[in-house]
Length: 111
Image (tube, rainbow, N blue to C red; front, side, top):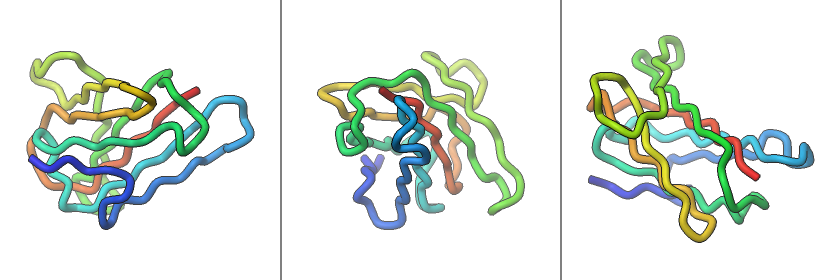
């Protein structure tokens, strides 16, 4: 397992609408991110937030063209999913399924 952060090589983070009143943060992992094993930590305080409204994940099953939406799930019950936790302003995303190495995009809604 690798614990990735926004400072990890190949990770791209963008605050899409910085003056909206809440944050829409896009995190893109490199293809070396192993879904089902690795975690992604994002320091929300760097973007003026401390809590999340929600997270949506997308896996690129074919680079740049075919994506699989990851449902947020507290269990590993048979669907592609992810779990989240926020501690001291840092969001940790853990992907559940499927176990593969794909570019993964997370859209974080935060405040």
